[in-house]
Amino acid sequence: MNEQIEALLDAALLHVPFDGWSDTALKAAAQDAGIDLALARALLPRGGVDLALAYHRRGDATMVAKLAAEDLSHLRFRDRIALAVRNRIEAAEDRELVRRGATLFALPVYAADGARAIWGTADLIWNTLGDTSSDYNWYTKRATLSGVYSATVLFWLGDESPASQATWNFLDRRVDGVMQVERIKGAVEKNALARAVLAGPRAVLSCIKAPDRASKTEMPGYLHPETNRQG
Image (cartoon, rainbow, N blue to C red):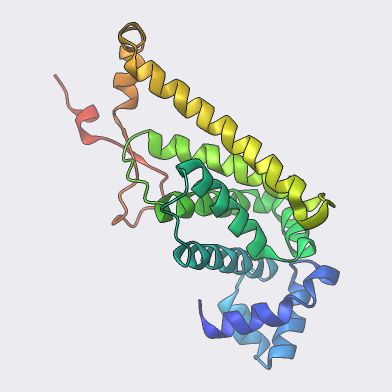
């Protein structure tokens, strides 16, 4: 992240609990950081929302750093997912900053930005944990984890239990639910009758591919070229 954006973000954290992720907070941060307001607006052209997204990206980077510093080899995969989500939430530190962000991204004009940020976090978790899926599972994994992450954050915002233990118990239950779905999918794949019944839908789903990482497009995915062939 740009050093000047980092400086603006550090300065803004003192103002956001009072002013929200707003242009007012950006102005105060620029003044505190000694950065010209015109430059601050050039770096964060949408003001508060870009400041909030910078804060979210910082949390993502902190999560990745924490995961990289830990030995995950002894953990079950479901425990690695739970740890990643916990690390991401703990990276936020201040509930009020997150609460203000949730309020901002609940506004219709910024809802898409919030959804992309959450999806990006889920994608980063899967990639960090070594996900190699390239078909429709790429989407289902990230969509499911986005739901788990969002629900856990909302629970955490209202959690007053010691050390947020109720939140981590809630997270474990949500992850267990996801893993149960994965076990059911695995059982279906092993069942000859189920495979035959689902042959049509599976053929359609097989055409869906994960996004090309090298592509410049912002589209969420693409259809395999073979689906466009005639004859």
